[in-house]
Length: 91
View 1: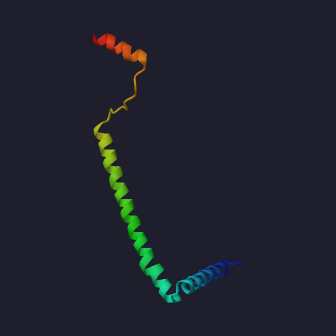
View 2: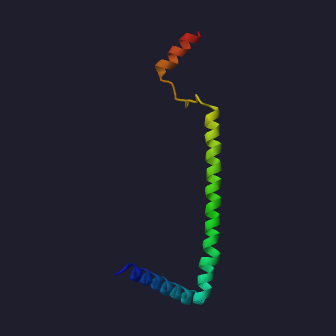
């Protein structure tokens, strides 16, 4: 199967699938084609772009907070020996 034949076969399968979906829903091929490729797909694309930009903004905010605290060390619980040593030093 050549490349052109593969592309033609794929296209024909997609057209067949859209025709089956259109009949199942009660629409024409043209109507379902418009709904999918002119309305739904661009809407999904815009929503994904918004989501990606929002995540980038959150990531930049998080990174700037970490840059403000360069020596931040997570609080770890002290062992009983360390806690006793600190108490003795303070008294």
